Amino acid sequence: MIDQQVLIDWDEISKQMSSKAVGRRIYKIRSGNGMSMEYLAGKIDKSRSTVSRIERGTQELTLEQLFSIAETLNVSHFDLLSD
Image (cartoon, rainbow, N blue to C red; front, side, top):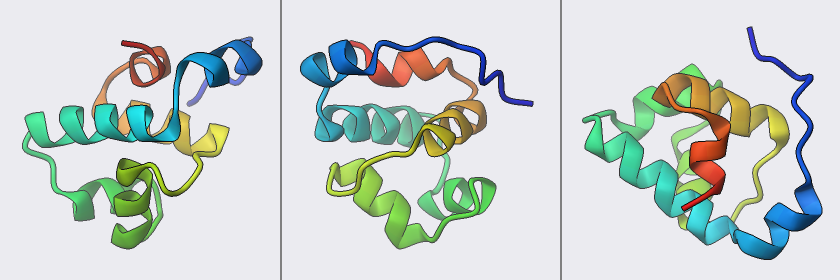
């Protein structure tokens, strides 16, 4: 279950992180774990092309997607948002 009680300063995060940077982190963690794009897509109930756009930074992440991706990659959502 995803803890949705976490308070996040999205304004500060948006100043520091771009969609491309978050996408690169997702790609790096996913591929580093030998996980396919298709597997990640299935786990978060999205298409492979959606995951591809997220990793390239051409599609904005929803909060739900961020938490789902972090859970699937077995990392904190903060790991995806920060260097």
